Amino acid sequence: MNKKSNPSNKEKRQKRKEEQHRIKLAMQVVDCANSLNDPLESFPVFQRFSKNGIDATLYVKRVTHLDKDVKDWIYDLTKRNMKENYESCSWGWNDKKKYEELMDESAWYLVSQLTNGKLLGFSHFRFDLDEGIEVLYCYELQLEPEVQRKGLGKFMMQILELVAFTNTMKKVVLTVLKNNEHSIFFKNINYVVDETSPMDCDEEEYPYEILSKANKRLITTA
Image (tube, rainbow, N blue to C red):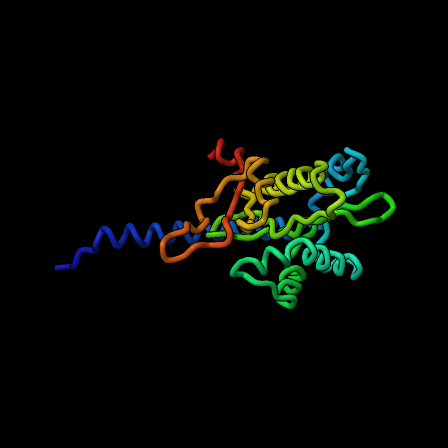
C-alpha cells in the first residue's frame, strides 16, 4: 500500500510556499522604490515649506549623493539632539556605530534648508522589509532647535508618508526612545504602537517602542 501523505504537512508546505512568494513580491516592491532617482521629483508642491517664519526648500537624496558638509552636519545634529537620551538608557552612545548607521549605503535622506543654504533638518529613512512586510522605515527625524515646533517636522513626516504610500509600502515605521520627551510628537500625528513593538515584562523593560502608520489605501483595497 502507498503511504498517504499527512494533510497537515501538505498544508504547511503550501503555506510556506505562499509566504515565500509573498516575501519575494514584497522585496520586488522595495527594490523598485530603491531604484528611484528622486522619490520627491513628482511632488513639486512638497519641495517647499513656507510657514511660521520659515521659508525652506526640501529635497531627497541617497546618502551616497550627499555632499560631505551635509553628512557632517547630519551626524553633528544627531549627536547634539540625541546623545544625552542614548546615554540615559541601556542603548548608550557610540560615535562609530551611530556614524556607520547614518552613512549606511542603503540610507535615503530628506533634507530641509533655507533658500540661502542654511540646513534646518533631515530625516534618515530606508525602503526595506520589516518582519517580511514592505515599509518605509524612518530612522531619524532631526531638526535644529530654532525650527522645532513650527510645523516643519510634521510637514517632513507627511512627505515620508507620501513617498511611502505612493511606492506601495504597507506602512511607515519608526523607533522612538521612551525617555525622549519629543517622541510624543509622533503619537500626536496619529502614529500608534506597532504590533512588533516589544512589551515590557517583569524580566525586562525596553527603553524604546516601535510606532507605525498603515497605508490605509492598501488596507481598503486588500
